[in-house]
Amino acid sequence: MNKKEETKLKEKIIRAIKNVFDPEIPVDVYELGLIYEINILPINNIHILMTLTSPNCPAAETIPSDVKNKVKMIKEIDEVDVEITFDPPYSTDLMSEEAKLELGFI
Image (cartoon, rainbow, N blue to C red; front, top):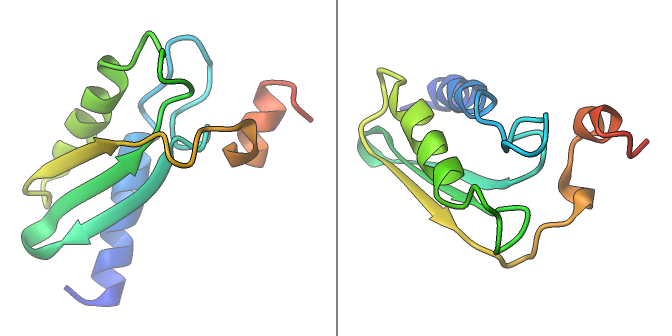
């Protein structure tokens, strides 16, 4: 896969992830800054490193599986692995300007 194809695929992945919302916050998980890394591995396997707003997040089960399911719907994708980390811990500094504006932080 060349760089251009990889960039296009990554854009598709981001668009898919932007359809996943934290049920308690009206902003998608990508704009919230919960996605730390999106890695495209050989044979279009995808590894996503993400966090949650807190280790006790009530949606801890649903958000990662929603991310996985949305990305897996992209026809070019083979397998999707979603890994949760709390290092570094989530902070509102990770939010996009759009998310901060939506939530009244700016």
